[in-house]
Image 1 (cartoon, rainbow, N blue to C red):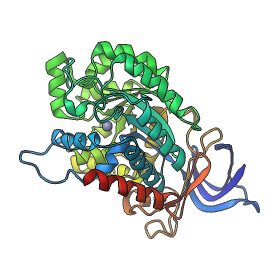
Image 2: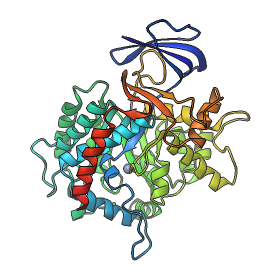
Image 3: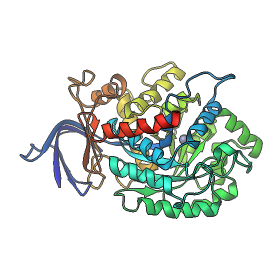
Amino acid sequence: MSTLHFGSALLPSGWAEDVQVTVTDGVITTVAAGVAPSAGDERHALAVPGIASLHSHAFQRGMAGLAETRGDSTDTFWTWRETMYRFALGMTPEDIEAVATLLYVEMLERGFTRIGEFHYLHHDRNGAPYANIAETATRIAHACEVTGIGLTLLPSFYAHGSFGGVAPHAGQRRFICSVDQFAALMDASRAAVRALPGANVGIAPHSLRAVTPDELAAILPLAEGGPVHIHAAEQVKEVEECLAWSDRRPVAWLLEHAPVDRHWCLIHATHMTATETTALAGSGSVAGLCPITEASLGDGIFPTREFLAAGGRFGIGTDSNVLVGVSDELRQLEYGQRLKQLERNVLSDRPGASTGRVLFDTALAGGAQALAQPATGLTAGARADIVTLDMAHPSLAGRGGDAVIDGWIFASGADAVDCVWAGGNKVVEGGHHRLRGAARAAFNAAVRRLLA
Ligand code: ZN
């Protein structure tokens, strides 16, 4: 058992002073406000809960910044995807583990304490299953184990190149499973995370491009009540192709034909009509927004204000991992809305309410729901995922309460996080993860080999 004491902490009920938190076996066991520090307490000025990145493709961290040169024609998501396929095709399981390990180190250093790993790079470089069909998922689990980040593993089912069961192309060969192979992959994936404290498993039908309706119906029971994540309506071309195939847009198709409820998370859902926006909000599912990746790929801007007004829930994901940070994602989310609406403080929900606080609270709750966490935040029963901020940072000094959250999100770079506990283990101190040096060295060696 360890005991922490914070001068100020953001609890589910709001800000509290003089907060003592006890942690046993990685879980918060008591939270008491208005308590003077005891002699054995580890003391910090200000704590907030760790937050989930509900959507990540870890291997893509290895190609961050490598798709920023203009091609022969208009560059789009689809040209970026060709670069991603070329990079993915070269990676060994050791490379995947090295890249994921550094990514999770960086996530923890920037305030993320849990990852929803939407994992589709399954097979060897020829497209054949490894001897352990979940070999690469095992590498992801190991990266989580050594870094301490919480894992929700979402093995992805990917079978086709486009709507209507079109055959996949050669660049997709490492992703492709039959329904039977996927069932075996799910069993092996559950085994891969069994020993990992706090880990859970869901499923991720990749998208309506990659999965037929019959396959979707066949794989959904494999979730066994866990989360279901799917990419939907990220791109205008995808919406047009879905309309040509089914006479329905992707979000409308899912709401009509799939049992979308609080267990589901629709990733992106960028391009929706007003009717779809209201219906998705009413479904109880979570919209998995990935603002930095959506900006990087030129996807578009999610109708966040309208979705929230209809009672919608969102969480944030780092997706392509081109840049990683809680504050960066939330800032990009709000700034996208400002650029679209020509207003400020768009996502604050009432006069006098801090925009940063609304963003933070909403993303915390949405991330926990989307990754099926029984409790979240600084409360008894939740995994001890705790972030302290550096109150000597110039954008935080002299501030308290919600102004700290606003200073962190809107006015600090990557260096406002001080310490991070993940599952009760203190893995980041002074802004640096204990594995930073080793993880960078292994990552750099892998990427140099891949780029040689
Ligand atoms: Zn994605």
